[in-house]
Structure formats: structure tokens, C-alpha cells
Image (cartoon, rainbow, N blue to C red; front, side, top):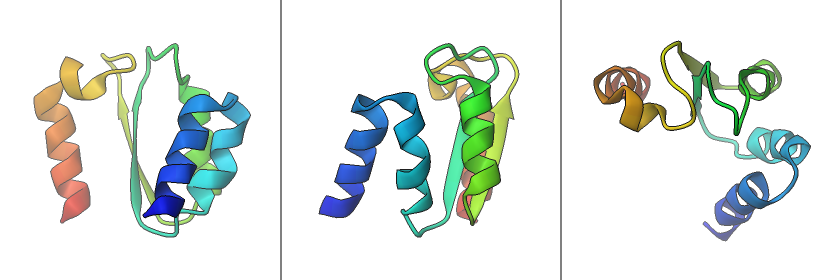
Length: 85
């Protein structure tokens, strides 16, 4: 929807602090995938989203940075499939 696109644009283009409220406003179940070595969106931000947002699942990948799906595709796909079930 247009609202979802607006929220995603805020997350990508605005300062990092601005992503917390928009994610909370999505109103749908979500999966946060976080790479421990991620420098673009540090783990502390991902954990803050999970702690402050209802209906959010969390997958923390220990051997990845920002592109978890490319760095560990099988592991990431497994967690996404579990979430979708």
C-alpha cells in the first residue's frame, strides 16, 4: 500500500532513529533479520525494534553483516520459512 511504501521510505532515507515508530505502525507480523557484523544497521537497532514492536519475530545471524540473505542464504531462508508458517 502507499502507507507501507511511505514507512519503508522513511526507514531507508531518514536518520536511523526515525525507523522505530514507522515499524511499530505497520500493524502486521514482521520478521527482523539482523547480522551481528552489520555496520549499516547495527544490531542494537534491530534489537530495539524487536523490543518495542508487537508481533515481531527475530533472527540474529552471527556470521553475517548487512546482506544476510546473500551471505547465509540457506540459513536465512530457513528462518523466513519458519516465520511464514
